[in-house]
Length: 249
Image 1: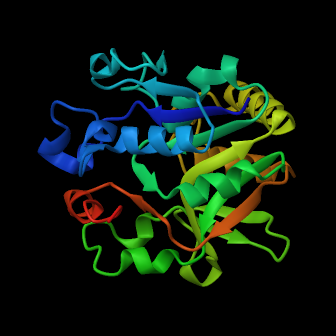
Image 2: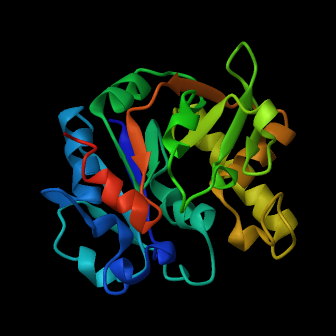
């Protein structure tokens, strides 16, 4: 059975008072929280083994029926270290998603059919989502450059717009081989870099998933992209939150 891992340990400080007493992923989009929108879509796609990594305001998740995993160091680390709080369950097929995105079921259904070891979801119509998005500049996008075979060549915020084919939406899939590759290279990177700079991050502890994907690519590991044209949205600012209320209409 494919496992789902949702990374929900961060505070979402860019949302200001909206997340003063509530984790970002529990903010309501219309009738239910961002997280519940994700869980419902996964369940409807027959993905029911759902695991949520929590940190900030973790008590707000205590009555949920999904498996809850705690990142006790969430104030000191970042999203990569959060993900690997779930290292023990990263066996077999895994779909991993950021908790501050919403998406249509078509995205999940397409990804679930992918059988490559490591596949990330990339929106090739990504620039449309930055029209009028004044509080989240395009420079903040997790940009992707891939070749004709859909192999990722570069990933990160620092890629030039000229080289960018699309935006990583914060969702990926590993098969059993990919999960073992992830764990092996995570351990080697942690041992080698520790508190030293790690690609765009000031230290390994503060690394993003895109830094880790860059590390895999640097080590000649193939990372594929599955392309989509919209069908998702990131909620990072109050402006995004307001716009998200119309997403499922």
